[in-house]
Length: 96
Image 1: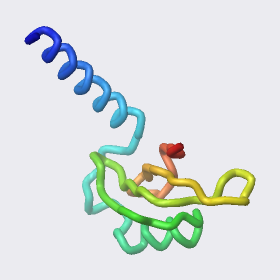
Image 2: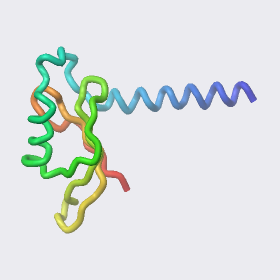
Image 3: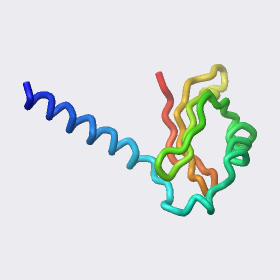
């Protein structure tokens, strides 16, 4: 029983670390980051995403929200990581 619990815990830690590693944002001081309100404006106005939740995750800005599908006919749930200095998308995941 203890071995199983240890294995499950180790697997969860490895998986969570892999998700953060995939969002490759620069390790720069927050004083160099784009202001939160400017970032949110960029997300809505330039990328066209609707923000449900906005947060900082490690060295990235992250949102949960909605974006238009590739065919432009519907909205889909998304999770997106942004470079906090430039505002560029570094990782986007469409939730199914």
